[in-house]
Amino acid sequence: MNPSNQNSMLNLGASHGDRDTGEDTLRLIAQLPAPRGLVDRVQAELRAAPRRARVLAWPAALRSDGQWMRSAAAAAIVFVVAGGGWGVYSRVQQPQPARVIVMPPRLAAPGSFSSAAAIRTPKTLDGPVVANPATTKAAEVRGPDKLPALAVQKASRRLQAGATKETSIQAQAQPAAK
Amino acid sequence: MSTSQAIFAGWMEIPNSAVNQDARSQTEQAAAEEATLVALVSQYAGTLYRVAFSVLRNPADAEDAVQEAFLRVLRHRDTLDDVRDRRVWLIRIVWNIVLDRKRRAKTRPETDDVSELARVLPHSGLSAEEIASAAQHHARVLACVDQLPTKERQVLMLSAFEELSSVEIATVLDISESSVRSRLFRARNLMAGLLNHERK
Image 1 (cartoon, each protein chain N blue to C red):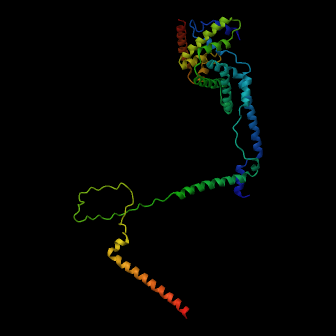
Image 2 (spheres, rainbow over the protein chains, first blue to last red):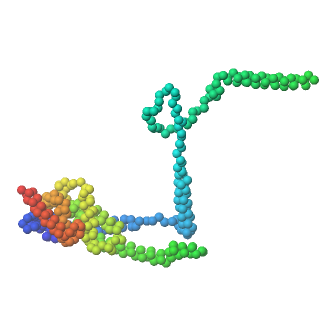
Image 3 (cartoon, each protein chain N blue to C red):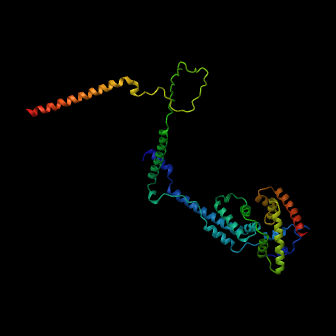
């Protein structure tokens, strides 16, 4: 440490003309010696620091056939990319034309209210609309008057079946009697 | 071998002699860079330590800052040849590091500064009372420095380094030289006012 530093410690009031601006203190700190062994410690730190970024290398066993491996890897990449593209393309659905369902014309029943000034209510739901009325049950279509005829038909069929059974039994019994 | 294979082989493959030559030149370059770095450390470690200590006021923190600065240099050693003034460049690196650390660190109490200065500052030939009073005065001055606006404070602190000219201070702070002068003028006036106020 030189003597000027020690003097500046005591001569606190005469740094900048007559005024004390505190620069002596800052100058004193700026002249402090570096601690011993600083250079060695920094150099040791630098030696311990990682040098360069490492790049992953091919395994030594594969290095001799590098060309073949590169081609295979390139082909695999092309295959994966092309396959992925085809997978996406094949899953895309073609837009289908919208189905139009024709509503049956509403016929005003005689004596009912007229629909002349009716306010049309828009369809708020996109549900299926039945174009034709569903087919009614067969019994309703045929009507109640046709039911006895069916019963008669069924009874006659049963009778016929019973007659054929009897004739077959007789036919079996005749050879036995003989 | 077909024509295309021959073309690709010629295009893609690097002859062994070229690889060996390249590896040799890389080794030589790495050795040269290492030698440059070692020279930089031995030449400027002390300067960087003082710059760091003037801001952080703690020997361990200052040493850490110096090490971090040289680690940054190690990371960017490829650009060392492009640097015109390495001393100012290094000071600028460590200056940014210590400002960043100072910003992140909590405010230290003034008593820490007093005890640290009493320990660090030279005191050969002084009595214990003189050392204590000098340390208290310096701590008071540093407290006043901390009250200065940032721009003025930075210029004032860097101006204390006799090895730095106003042009170099301007380079470190990335401002013009006239700004350095005007800020230094303002800083001195403010400091005088603050210290007079302290005395009264």
